[in-house]
Length: 574
Image 1 (cartoon, rainbow, N blue to C red):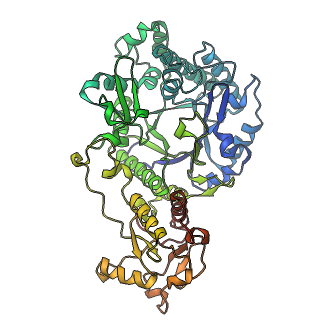
Image 2 (cartoon, rainbow, N blue to C red):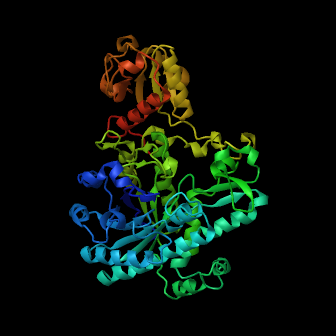
Image 3 (cartoon, helix red, strand yellow):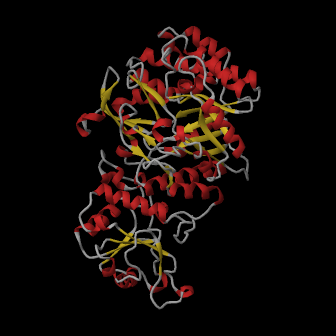
């Protein structure tokens, strides 16, 4: 693994969190509708994925102590028939059934027993994640108090983490009794904390703590470990000794890095809105994304890969790649993650997997899973109840083969542009200028109306390269000549008409609602540079009145989905 010529495998993953808030469980599998749609697995197979992070969750399967295998039998055997290897998860940001919780001394043994039952039933499963992101879960449940058991105390945090580590050790022992070749894929979020000089100690602590779940499983938290004295003061000396003497190292490091993973701590509270204010009991400070405050780019995903490899020299899987944003930003982040993994592999880092995460999207992460929140589409959009492929499906399907990418995926993401800086002086930015446009703009045609201006404004805000034409195709041809020399004429990736009357656009198609091919009148297809440009007009009700910005954003997302390579858009090499 990691040798020259090795191929990075493509995995998939379903957001499957079952977390508890108060007395209520929030079940992502149920909210996405996946619990009643077994044919989702056939859709996943069409992406070309080799393996799937998949839940057989303790809370869902054995809520009362007696397992019901009906659902997992059907799904796992269906995956097996499709040739997709499951990476089975047992707890995903959860605290177990109602009869236990993260601070319960019986949590570890309980999960161990359940893991043994699951492995005995499915002894052919080779890859396991007994507990997803134990450090993140311990922070949210026992340090910040967001999730059950809703404690905000450092000792409780370490207790919750140790219980999850012991649960992982107990689970893998039970699993390996059924399948001695079983592999542990241990996931956690990995970012780096930056800070003002006044908060350097807190940043140093955060940057040490981020390794705690893996360090414990690798048996490294002995008397010489920098965290040892802190945990011993909380009374955990005996538990640390037992774990160090009987480690359970991860066979694959499951690294999850989001655009929010790198953090910045700032003691200057007046620079930040109240919802970013926090502290450690001794000092008050703002805690925000490093991308929003650091003039220089933070280490990011490339830095996380490099640090994890240097520390553990163990194969790495990117086990969650997702960006809850507009469609083009989702494409840009997925493409960048894949490219970063390829570069890291070429540099000798054993990156073996990249995972298309949140295949069916996710619900409520904007509230940290504490309330209803909003739905974020993923590779499929299930907002209507019926899964619909988004442009991410085409992108992920093609990444392993180096296939064409949608033109908007070639533009810089918001995290690479100067407007990322909300809490720093943009003039101090050392970030490079955005990359030049891809050469494939979106054409927006129609009269100079409030609607057209709104569309153009939103395209600019989303860094979607675009060109405006007042009255359609002929005007655009003139604008194209002015924009670039004729020898470098630009072919748009789509034409979006904002005119209430399609005939007034002077285009060769009228009353169009779905993308279709449009050609210049009287020009042979073989000689026409526009021979396969999709044309879409806004629905009558949108074009006839001023829609909300949310409607325009949704329309652009849908346009990108329906003009991905293979859906009618001429390809662009990536």
